Image (tube, rainbow, N blue to C red):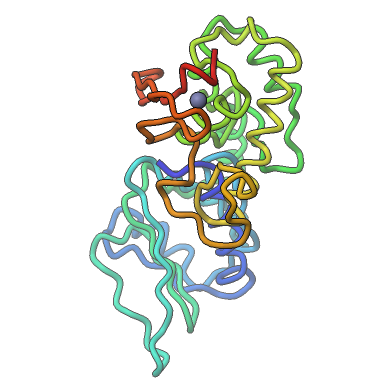
Length: 266
Ligand SMILES: [Zn+2]
């Protein structure tokens, strides 16, 4: 599932490609056809990311909410040398296009049109998003400090922190040296503060890279070159810990596979 950095990156890229000009809106797959017809020829004034949710603010005063879920994908398809856009595959739920580029959305968990209250209702259920300037770290702090749930589950709970997914939860806990099964309320102030600071910096790096690289590039000895996938994490998806070489433990925590180093995270 895409984590928050993907959605923020989409908001940024879609703003550049699509915002502020009349768009062609289509739903070849059909499930968004009536809404697409209403929006056709209108303008998206801005794209907003909040956690794993993407909002399109249309000049009709309405909002489209997109949640990619596990299978949703966005593809950018530029026009060919003759200015012709590639035809949209029949699986596309929503195509937004200018003269020069089409952006195709397939397989989202949600793609719906509604009033601004639709956005407010969704955001009201979410914890602070580490990538947003208006994020309040104290809400994260309080959410963790009062919970008996394991910190590895709390990091995936979107009402505690919005945008962290399975890779970042494993890697942030690794970097902070925190065992995933420790109850939130047993973490000390400095650990909660370090976790917040770590997810902020990891997600920001993810937006910049447009992929997940959690290892410190200096530590890898490759400050500028592209980091291969197998070297991009400390514990997640690995057999052995990148730092100490111990066998990585994996188990199910909050219905997703947790990865942790028994040596580095006590
Ligand atoms: Zn280790």
